[in-house]
Amino acid sequence: MNKPIKRIYALVSALLLSLSLTVTAYAGAGGLASGKAAATEDAAVTILYTNDIHTYIDQDLTYSLVAGYRDRLDHVLLVDAGDHIQGTAYGSMDNGYSIIQIMNTAGYDLATLGNHEFDYGMEGALNAIAWADFPYVSCNFYHEQNGVVGDNVLDSYKIFDVDGVRIALIGITTPESFSKSTPRYFQDANGNFIYGIAGGTDGRALYESVQTAIDAARGEGVDYVIALGHLGIDPSSVPWTSREVIANTTGLDAFIDGHSHSTVEMETVTDRDGNPVILTQTGAYLAALGQMTIDTDGGITTTLLTAEDLKDTAPNADVEAVESSWITQIEEDLAVRIADGDVELTVNDSNGERAVRSQETNIGDFNADAYYWYLNGKEGLDCDIAIMNGGGIRSGAEVGTWSYLTCKMINPFNNVICMVEVDGQAILDALEFGARYVGVGEAGGFLHVAGLSFEIDTSVENTIQEDENSVWIGAPQKYRVSNVRVYNKGTGAYEALNLSKTYRVAGTNYTLRNCGGGFDMFSGSVLVKDYLCEDYMALAEYAMAFADSNGDGYANISSKNSPLAAYTGYLLDYEDIAGSGRIVLTGTTE
Image 1 (cartoon, rainbow, N blue to C red):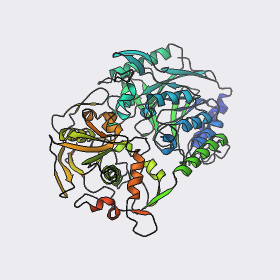
Image 2 (cartoon, rainbow, N blue to C red):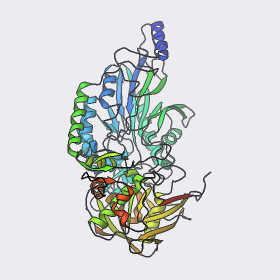
Image 3 (cartoon, one colour):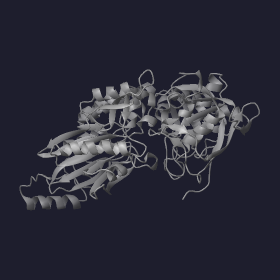
């Protein structure tokens, strides 16, 4: 394989490389403030990469700092592995348009589609692609008609010639986009699928799509083939993880990953033919910038750079101006004070680890309670139960001032509240589906509840039937969920769920009406009312309904001040970060 070497003075270059790897503080322009190695003349190509930023543009590490670092490097590419236009109010307020403008200004060269690029519908995803000055690639996102796979929607890969080094970057989109976005976005008005994402229940369709792209790229005489994928390494994503794709294909040199929010600085995974492939992922929310270095001797190394590492790098002024303008506008629009939080509501457990996708948390209780109260207390629609998927809860709330922005950060996805009627069996099935990975890993479909309590036995194996798109198609052999009890507002008691009884369930149309997260057991539900309000507005209305306990004109958020505190026997404890005991985990796992 031809891997060009552009080394004029080999001895001098080797010395420079040695110095760059041992330096403890690099104070030159664009240098690093820690022991991390900056790109040197001995690097043929540097690829900077991001993933799962989720529109967090106000962190310590910013797009402008990334662009500033890029400005200091030669022979460099800047790429993104997906999930960049949705996650906070900075994305959802204009369907990601301003985020794309920031990425354009930062000089991105390439991106692939993450599942959250579809959160504004297929039209929204295609708009983002059109707005971008850089191309998107995906080897497994295709048109279909009458169940027949057609042409790919996007190019499978893009070849870059960087100072004589030819690099093919292959885009890969997670098949979980169907369930973790909304299946109807991939359908026409009659419910027929007109778009597909190759996956396969055993992963073979995904592996074949990737291998086809690898072979095509190799056929064009490239020096390196690198995957730019949004697959992740979570157990819940099996068989579509990046490690499995590497293990079932051959011809990749490296894999830049996303989706699972994992921090993988540099891992070696063996491909189908026993060759080593470098796997890397930066985590999430721009906690780090990935730097892949392709040395002139053919070696590939990766490292992750934090804001501290880049503290001596000047941000790109043009990008910084766009960021600042958009942040200011959003803050002005949403910064109106609406309440004061007397307790911290968090997505984390007592160890600071994200728990909202695998167990009860106080923010999960609050979120479900907001929907429950909105239907009962504001709309007077006699709601029995409310649910909220953990993946839709993107932030907690610290003690102090609450604004509309606080609520928008918690629920940023522009979903609307609705209420449906379903039988108890559908409720049991939904709880089971949401709990299928508890004890094994996390899942965005984990359900937080209001007006309900239940237990999850983690020692029971998950045997739920689901299709290749992770959509529910049948009950398990044995349920992990048991002792489901529904709150009776008349008696103040929690009573056993009646599988044949009809209940009124509140939540977002994402879960209850659009099969979001794969919750197809709700497809036969009867709609009571839709489009009540946006999800974050239900949070705001609930927050403002709390009692003003200090007389300053603003509600004080605590358990005793909640309007639901008037419900005798209702499980309510926002002071405990683990919630009020609505969801109890039992059993053990191997």
